Image (cartoon, rainbow, N blue to C red; front, top):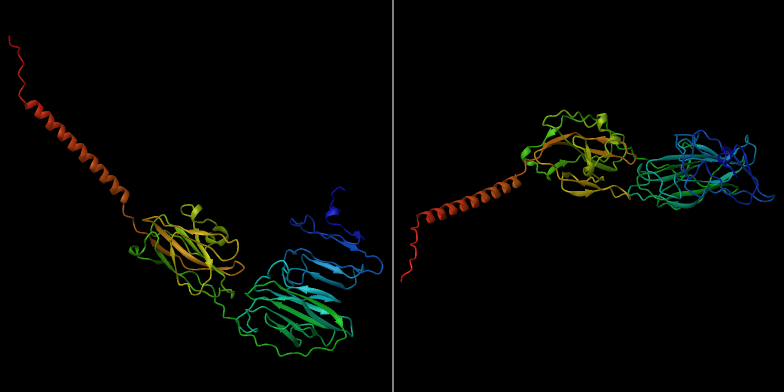
Length: 423
């Protein structure tokens, strides 16, 4: 069969086989923009249709209400009827679900959910019915703080259509996963991910005539740590020349547990720039020319005069300083992270260095530039060459003197008499 636009993205494909597979256009490659693909699946009389998303769904995220890229499943062929629901990355404003179905955390079950996300669902059942919420899989990241901490991961189920409704339960990593039943035909579900990641959850919701679950008191959420306004770097400090060896420039780290945007610091980069001369105007580390997306060189492929990353490592609030040029490799603990060589610096050279702190989404704050100059190394090679030259000249001089002495002795020696034969 020839490939056509309608094969890749059908206007309305009629599917009647007992089983099959449908995909987005060009899967597993990226799908093109502005596509509207429809499949109408019909089962044999007396049977139902079961739709499973067998692979991790990766669609573009646009922020709210699942109005951009999504899969929508409708119960029946009447497009004016209530849909069974849309599946998108993480609905940040509650999307409507009806009837029976399931929902899950982002990326489930193929990979861990991302940090610091909030997803919400609003489920509505038939009038006069209640809704039952049951976990079919549950694996949230552990948290040393109380479940009320904003840095912990949890699932909340409300008896109504919003967060202002009575709370049925907040589920954390160590909470018993009991079924919850609403008192009416509406239920609101909220998932909030913290910084401890795991597989996530999958839950099933259905209409029921079971008795309602009791509500609980809402946990008191501690105030989020105060955010700080990012400050422009101050005038760069100067390290005394006598204190800096080629592998001994010590940078005092800014131990920032939280960035200026309020997010927790995830990892740190140390960025070095070789200067052409002392006092060179380099601007500040927040200038556009030092944007993270533009600094991609490392020590092993650096270009003179351009900034390069000499180290990258996980945030450690106990780490107070970092030594530039210690000739060690540094990398984050994340699988597949690049290793950076913190290579030895050139002698007698001016440098500037700064620290950049990132959160889990690569937002960052930049510290102040620190300027320093390395010592001029002792000219061992020059000294060695001079010594060799002196030795060679000395040996040549000695040889010349010996030659002169020998020559003079030969000249001063009396001539030997001729031997005359006697008869």
